[in-house]
Length: 609
Image 1 (spheres, rainbow, N blue to C red):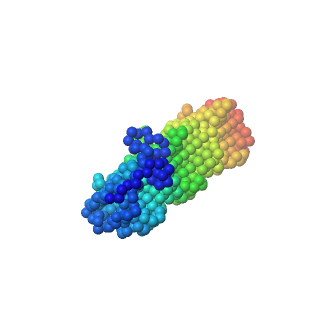
Image 2 (tube, rainbow, N blue to C red; image 1 turned 90 degrees about the vertical axis):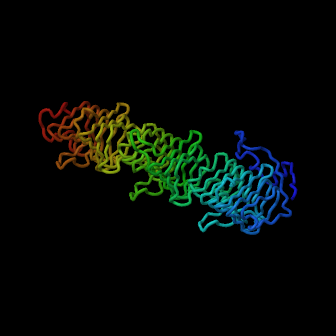
Image 3 (tube, one colour; image 1 turned 180 degrees about the horizontal axis):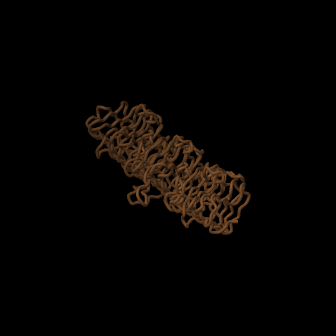
């Protein structure tokens, strides 16, 4: 048996580059757990001056190699029965292009120690042998402790691209790895498919092109204590194809994950503080019904979703189709102290307007707090009729095309604590189609930027507009308060409420406000209504005005300015229309202040000037 050569100087140990990670704590910080492993081992280097030949025939049915012995492999090793066991100090040197493949029925056991690890290495230059494959290999003997796999990855394991790896795990393989170092791979250190069950405690990836390429189902197997050292790409590649999914409960640690293709969240995926998901161009993540995505960072350690390149619209974004059931609604996605950037590169539907970093259209609900939407093309957030955003607060939208596009009901779910400035076009864009409705009682708070109303919408519940709110209406569109709803505008002298056109056309740009409700909550106080009266509310030629009050409808005005605008300031559309005025000012109206279509007693509570 060859005798080990003992080295005791730090200089010689460093020159060999052996066990710098395998024999010490695998983190860059001092170990804190009592089982973090021994520190400061001095390696016993196995003599490889006269290696023994190890042939494929030698290992069939199982074989235990001799400790602290060097072996040479000049042909592919294929094991489908028994266990090949390598005890401490064993070194196996593979010739160029050769490999060891362990199939169902076979197992590979590497049992090194800190001073005498097991090594699978190359006879020649780095990256010259193919590596280790475990395919459908299961059993307790698949246990690697204090082992080094180095200088492999010379060829693909399958016909699929990117399958070069020093350690390739496929099928229903099980493998326990503890204090394992994978280094100097020509491509990936580790490749693991979706059905593999592996662990990598206290492990090290060193000087590989990429540490690992993983199915999203197994990305959680990379623990927090893994060490990444001098890899060309300092991230884990994740997702092989656009139908990959995460099912069951998974937690991704604070690493950088390069997302290579679209993937689905069908289970419960938690992203821990400090993690970063970098998406390849045009790619996305979709949270399916029943799945959950939880990304809770901290003020100091955000969870980041970004493009692999910091370019507006580089990736598509996050689609949420989960939650929104019951009251309060179930939550499909949670973002807190997160950053979502560089998304919005493609529409989510056939409607080209549906470009958004976070897209919610089907039944869904998301909790979004303390989150930054930055550098996204078009919208940061798109929230449709069937979606909900309960507790939306303290978010920042900046550097996007537009901050958000929301269904009218979503507006009431937002606190006035978010910052929406520095976008190409600041504002909250409201309404998707001309049948949209405010369906539940709510208050629209002042976000510090305008609400841009993109189409006609109906108020069929109690709607309150807080002081300071600005509503900008698109051309020819209106707000209709139906007989089921009410409109209460709570402006103040210091912070009036403003209704105006997106283009400030003095002779009328938008249609105006139509009141069909007889509620005594219909009160507009300290407000300005400008640029309305663009077209008539009915077929009658005198039905154009900033405010149109239907027959039997009621409205009170207090300290309100109507105008400039087209048509009239106010049109009373029937003999039973009820209007109360206190300190109302009309200015620069094409047709005049008030038109009463059917004059009669009792139509005015107070005569408007």
